[in-house]
Image 1 (cartoon, rainbow, N blue to C red):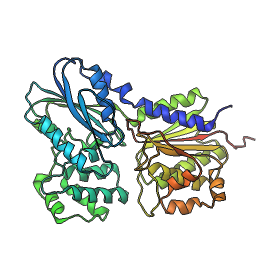
Image 2 (image 1 turned 90 degrees about the vertical axis):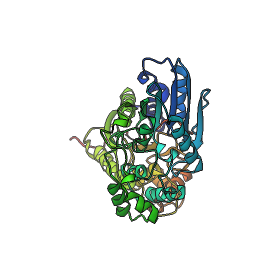
Image 3 (image 1 turned 60 degrees about the horizontal axis):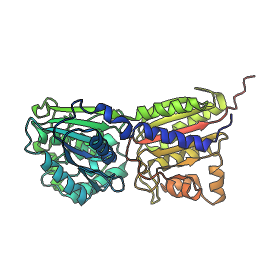
Image 4 (image 1 turned 135 degrees about the vertical axis):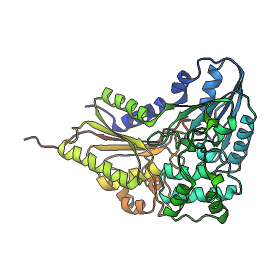
Length: 426
């Protein structure tokens, strides 16, 4: 089989991104009646690209405001695009959240609102609840990001500290009709978790948020604890009549991207194995992937090479060192350390939004000689892993993937390509 492994891995990554891009997935879901006035609001890394699609397709009057991450903007003529910080919120995110809330207040039942939602919306649409400061939210957010908490846990805390998430934005729109179109970046694709569910009812409780903070030993100001102990901190619950005219539609999810990559694998002559949406510590998830790859190489199980292992989801990193690197670099560094140059195994791990954590790369590529090449440069995979320095490790190998912002986000994408098996059938 004649194939360039690295080229194929990059093609799979591009295919996964394209399958979730707003230009491909949004238009078919918009209301059939596209006449009349519509107010467009949005938050997330795909918000600007989604707004472009609405502007192109809507036949009536369009106005509105969306917020996206710095560098993820796109030119719109009728919908204002504002950029703010992610993953830790800043003053720009606070200011735009206030404006969004004002924009949808005092609407009538004749009004229509389109809410464009994608991953990153929690940090970008940051409006602290009464008595809580932006600095409080920033410090808690930073602590959660370093703690190893899952995205569901982080967003449970975020929505109970917010004046806009957990259904509160949808409640503010009442009695207007609200259409939420969401691109999922979370395992399980739960509407309540995607960007902390601003327009959907939320079954989680403030008591659960307090328990999460306690579980990860996160210290919070007295004002935050007092707020979370107050009934006022509860989110909008299922059955609330103020959400009766709020509709939610998932337009892209990680599984679609994995399936698109699987089709590409088959076209190239490789059997795909989709593991699905995964959570857990990046380094531990990598060890499981390494075990599967090793079993394929040595025993031809659970499928024979040539093949590709595909997975998505959102792993976490408990920060122990002071190196550079996001979830995907950490995954790939742990995989490299586990496989130690196993012949015929190549891998790519990247974030579909084009930014791995807070670095400038989407991810990186591992080849069978990565471990030896790094060792020749004096780099120990295990030592760099202890320092959370996946970025530095793969930068030294000139193996980083830089895509620039993609303006979509279905979270992590991982592909492990296995060229051959050493199984002896005799």
